[in-house]
Length: 261
Image 1 (spheres, helix red, strand yellow):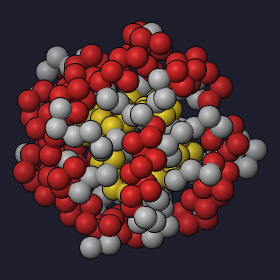
Image 2: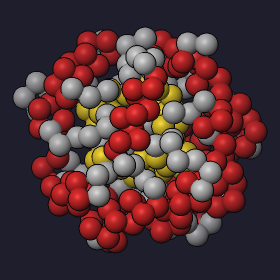
Image 3: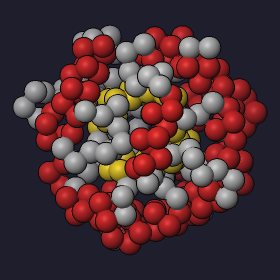
């Protein structure tokens, strides 16, 4: 329900939300589920749950390799939804956004996916390779089940295109703070402050900023301007290299920095 997202931002009372991305099923279902379940107690306000795909064009090597590990472990879109169902047994307040590519969703069927996502306790989705010009069928299916279809705005989204990008978006807008792939260095080109203000004005929604945020220091900096801060690649990398405890410790430090504590 997009209602969960709205409530989350309302409850933060103007403070930035910390949004954590993990790849569902990486390195295996049990480990991934345990990390997913522990995210809220480590300060995560909104969860992005990645669904693996064989050709993740917008992702850098960290997320791409996580997706391949997940697929090798047998993860499917159905098992990502099952992870959300399991999470909801102990948490009914933290929003979960599915993030990934259109192919598995299209294969399931937009109406079937929307119903299955709703039943699993999913609140919305970011489909990175489905532009506004092509998402009307999915958006219609989402509206039936009060799910948020969250769009991406980028530094190259100009004044003419921005209204189309934000039209029909619910929950929040995801501002990609750089051009390129996930996990790359944070771009200094153009002011994040100005861009966030522009997107917020056009959409009337909270704006969360992601891509390139890797450290608590950078998270704190972005949180001054944005309504939310997204970290993905750094968490996925820490989980892969040092295991769940280390990944959750990083999550907590990033959350604390985002919340200003």
